[in-house]
Length: 240
Image 1 (cartoon, helix red, strand yellow):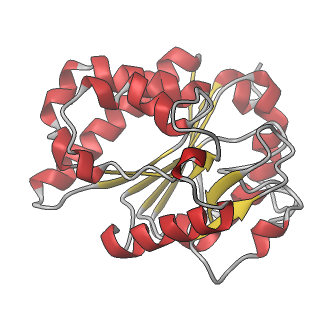
Image 2 (cartoon, helix red, strand yellow):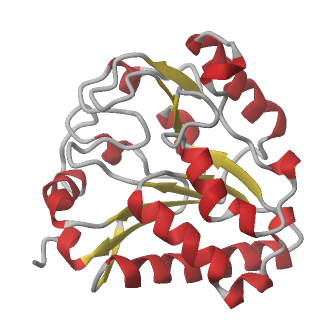
């Protein structure tokens, strides 16, 4: 499957384009009579996309309470921690639109009391019970080291193929304990959207779009079932 690059001048225009495309995709799916399922990511560019979504007048084309929200990974910290991807998404988007709480599927937090491995198993069980079989869109950031979700280059979690969610105990980026969807789960999607901005990530983008193996460039393992789009600003594309 050939990945497509969509390059924009800067992070702001990139986020605007992603927000508009996601609104159009969600509205189209709802018009067909289905409830769309989206896997969110964290990070600076994701936060900007979420704020664009919350402020867009076109957002009224989407029935936000008829969208299923999931996450590709989460930091295993207390639920009120600003390190949580879900807390970021709530502050930037979900608290500003009408969502159905039953359709917002956060990964367990440290204050759930669950050991990390059990927390990963609990999210896998929720995905099995309430997931529709495939996401419509999986959005992923990309770290300067090439990691996606919480699947880091060279990590043992990359090789897990018998689970949809896995515990991460040794993340090289703090905090060390996380939950991540595996490639098996991330690839159950109709569309994969990588959202990347910043010159410091240009090398990682180039490696991830090359012929490196999973352990060197984990993004190469996420191909989904349909489209693969790399949403980039000029700096991340290597044009600057």
